[in-house]
Image (cartoon, rainbow over all chains, first blue to last red; front, side, top):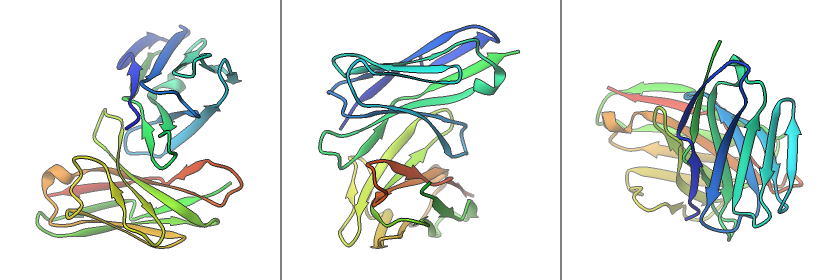
Length: 111
Length: 116
């Protein structure tokens, strides 16, 4: 199975602070997705990265995929309480038949 | 965009009974559907992958006789939790991938199951 390890497991930050979440794969990634979720609710798609070295931004969130395509980072600038939730990276298996999620990062933003 | 629905959104059942959860792709044909479960403060764990017209492929550790998956058509997959127990209480999410012009998959809103 595709193993995706996220760090940190949980994060508590003061509003306005920047933060970074990492997602590391045991295998080469052929597409890395980032989602946001609150337990008991659906997933919110954030970004998808495919190419080594690719970087995408949406509002205050930036995601990067390293050149070797085995690690991705999600960076939030000037965090707000609305950023709180569970952040999940996800990727397909190398056969494309399965889709796995990372271990998840729980983010709390203190006003 | 492509829409995936789940029904019911929440269900409470008694221990020992079975409960069925439906996952539908509303505006596209889903050749593959995935079922995940999630416990509080944890990530989504892939339970099984189902392709229309064939048997589901279960992940290691998931009991196929307990979690029956049927992908009878290109728009519907069902997950039946048989002889449910309190430890089966969880949040179940499905996703669908198919003929949408891309390789993306679309997630349902989830079903919260509580077994009393």
